[in-house]
Image 1 (tube, rainbow over the protein chains, first blue to last red):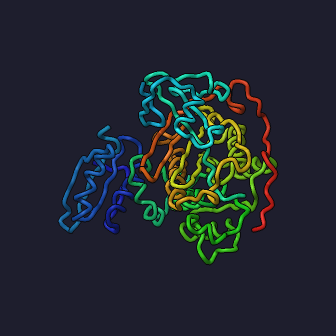
Image 2: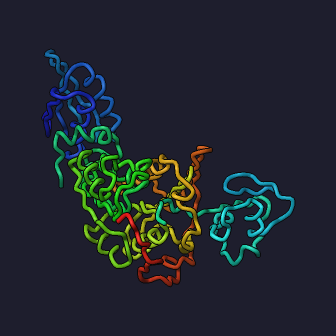
Image 3: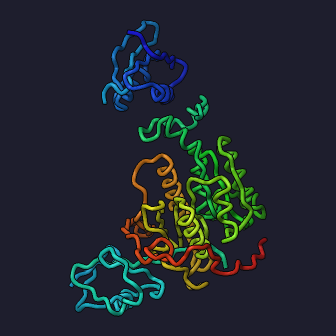
Amino acid sequence: MNADEFLDITDVVCPMTFVKTKVVLEDLDDGQILELRLNDGEPIQNLPRSLKDDGHKILELANNDDGTFTILVEKGGLT
Amino acid sequence: MVIKVNGENLNLEKSLNIAELLMAVKAAQPEYVTVQLNGEFVERDDFPKVFVNDGDEIEFLYFMGGGQRD
Amino acid sequence: MIKLANEQLERYSRQIILSQVGGKGQKKILSSKVLIIGTGGLGSPAAMYLAAAGVGHIGLVDYDTVDLSNLQRQIIHQTCDVGRAKIESGRETINALNPDVQVHTYDEQVTAANIRDIIGDLDYDFIIDGTDNFPAKFLINDACVLMRKPFSHAGIIRFQGQTITYVPGESPCYRCVFNEPPPKDAVPTCRQAGVLGVMGGVIGTIQATEALKYILGVGELLTGYLLTYDALTMTFRKIRVPHNRRCKICGEQPTITELVDYEQPTCDFKR
């Protein structure tokens, strides 16, 4: 699946992970896909749920086996 | 009869008009109070003419200016 | 439109994550202009919280200097500011708190002659009445009704406070509830009756809350409601007030069509 936008948030901690993701998603259209690279730990534990609460759909979640994860999010996919 | 004044129940033996009610509750500066009866404003000229009934809700609204200007 | 810098994402992160705010809401706040008339007990906390939230332009109107007795509640000023112009002290506090905010100062008392120009200077989005006297409060109400500007009215005394929000065309104005100014000295002032400092904090912050909700377009405003607060009994009451058909300025047959000064400004020795 090809993403419309890519965001690497391995350089920040929560809640900045969510803040940065939220702001990038705002600029996408509904249905567009954002690819996220995020750290293991708090980010992977918190972010998927926060995104779902905001109405976005997690399409894929993959462990990169290097301490990071990749998530594909569809904007507004749950609304 | 029981009426509500500023959210609190008040027992009255007989109906009072607004002017009498203001005296009864010892309202501060009754000449400058805004009165609502069941949500509607009562004109100052009508204070002696409007009587309360059982279940009525009255609000006394007071000026509050704050400040220290003399 | 603004692009939020990383530092701004961090600074405002705690409100950006709110679904009612987001980056879009934060940009609205950063683009907004709020005028605060009176940097005293009410205006101080209102200005500080609006600055903290990132309101892009804050206007401060006050012609007074900081007095020692102000410091019990006018927390935008500090001990070292005694004797200084309140607008300068206010500007400094805001700048230190948040450099994103541009502060516009008006070293004046609002009068019928200048209030339209002050409000029109930046065409402010929302006005906060932080004044301490009834002639000013009625003037602000009248100006906002005539200029179709939303505003928050408030007053505090002893252990009490109250506030109402006006949005043009949608709600009763201050005059709907309190028809005209009381005679001079008829109603006690804080100087005569006293006021617990925190009263300004609670009510002034509610005024700032209303401004932010208006800017963001969220929640229910205190339009058509007089919120009263009694700190001793810890009671808030939200009293529904209707539009007054007989209101002299926004009623069916308005008699007030121009702004008026209700009394001569008192000679102020502090100036």
